[in-house]
Image 1 (cartoon, one colour):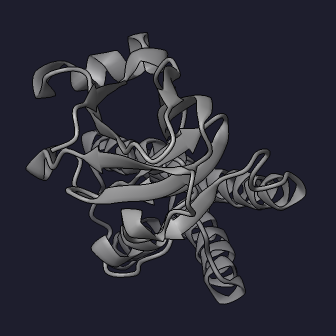
Image 2 (cartoon, rainbow, N blue to C red; image 1 turned 180 degrees about the horizontal axis):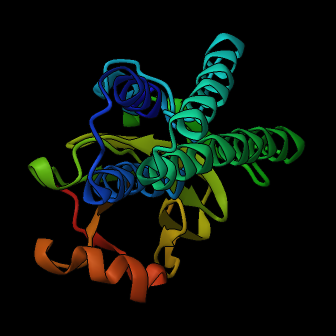
Length: 242
């Protein structure tokens, strides 16, 4: 749309477009394109609520796709007819965004198919409960509390895995409650490719187990750790019950 408007203005007024304008606009658009295309396409209900129920930016409707294609062809025609070559970088970035939208949509559908194809739980577990009192007799409640770090990661939910099964998600300051039978188990945090080494623990009959989960690094080092040590991102600590 920016290419169409600028190229149309050049054709009407005859004013040239500086080369720096097209390059600057291209880099300005490329940053959010790369940022959003690289994020995990799966959003939980809590994440959707915190971003005002918006959808993934690259999940477009057919009408939106039609508008993108129509504007792209019109922009290309105006650029060629008016010889506004400085807008070519911006148009290329816009076309890249369209290609990435198809890739993100395909990835999201593939994740959904994989989630539906595999069983939710591979062992005995009680999930979806709100209180330790709801755990069956002889089993033990396991509580995982997420430490609220404020603005640092307020928009995302942590995925909690027990014995390799995803048992729930945690928003800032929330506590996940589940029931497990006595015996050895393991717990792990996850967010996209970010995770941690599974933390082993043993469940005793009718004895509650408490964990806290948070990013392992200080705020200023978190972004570097995302790239260098994705398998050590979370810190899960077992705490004594109160």
